[in-house]
Amino acid sequence: MNNPIPNKDQVEGKLKQTEGKVQDAKGDITDSPEDDAAGKAKQVAGKAQELLGDAKKAIHEATR
Image (cartoon, rainbow, N blue to C red; front, side, top):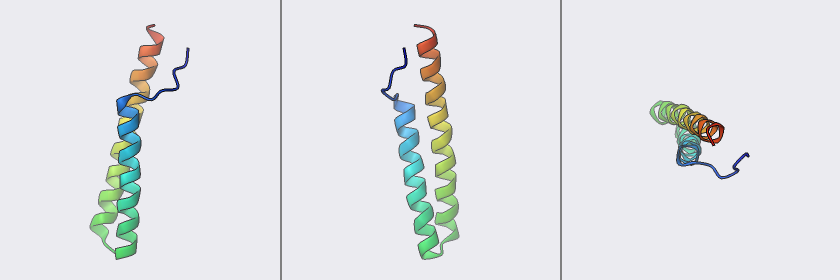
């Protein structure tokens, strides 16, 4: 059974990705390489956390 409700890591990962996109855009607008790089790093960290959440969810569903 595929549970459509995301787990904590999936939600927090998506949130970090969104925050990173905003910070990246801010860096583009203000011509700030620091904000640009930090935004991209936050997006990668968020994607990693989301994938961790996906793996946890798959394991949980497989062991039901």
